[in-house]
Length: 90
Image 1 (cartoon, rainbow, N blue to C red):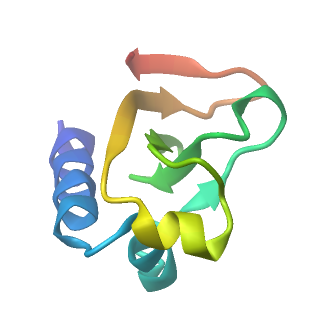
Image 2: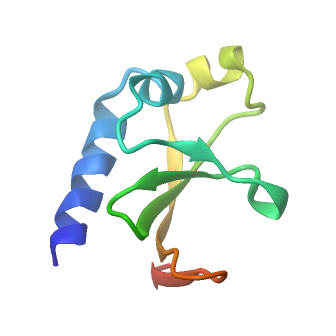
């Protein structure tokens, strides 16, 4: 599927960034921090409905902490149809 290629590309783009903050600053895939119980995670656009969800390994989410962050956990790929999440790759 095409979204798997884009997901792999996003992972490589994150990996090639000097830190997670710089990746966020580049804006590739329109990264945004999730809210609520998932506020420690970020979603990165793969397509209109598919998002790569990652958790940066950091102690905080301020600029200084994210500048030190060079590792993430890939939570998976989620489909954002409607009001619920459908995990495709958990």
